Amino acid sequence: MSENSQRIAARIAEIIRTRPAAWDQEVWLKLDAGHGGDVASMRADLDAGDGSCGTTACVAGWAAILNAPENAKAAPPQYWLIRRLVMPDGTAAEIKRLGQAALEIDGRVMSWLFADYRTRDQVLTALDSLAAGRRPELSGDDGDDEFDDDGEIFEDA
Image 1 (spheres, rainbow, N blue to C red):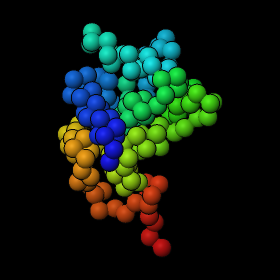
Image 2 (cartoon, rainbow, N blue to C red; image 1 turned 90 degrees about the vertical axis):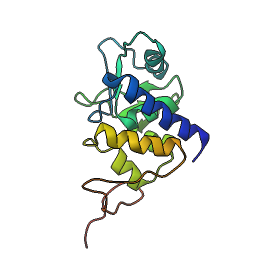
Image 3 (cartoon, one colour; image 1 turned 45 degrees about the vertical axis):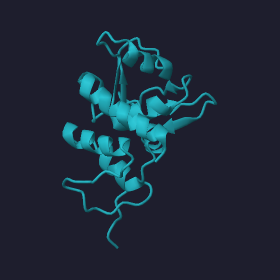
């Protein structure tokens, strides 16, 4: 694990602890009305220090935001969900894949950590492990499932 991925994990844990309204494990990314959607503004929302934050995201969303180029932007929502960021070269990338790369986690950890039903305590414990350079222990109802490199559960043959 690189120092950058450890720093990102620590920053996400800090966001969850200090700005609970900015974390929602059930959405990839949500922006307040009128928000420009650029990554630089999303980061500035966090650094404003006045308690306001026009950005809400899950662990994957915050990892993607914290690691993406500043001039990346949120892709137009599909229905009400923002599922991708548009990179400076115009390509769109899935938030879950950007988050996985930013945190340098395998498919099993990605599927577990990015699950929308993870509790605050589960997420924080995992992020604290990642911030310390350790692979998190995966506990919970699906902790024994087998995942492939893409984070998909293997089907029984």
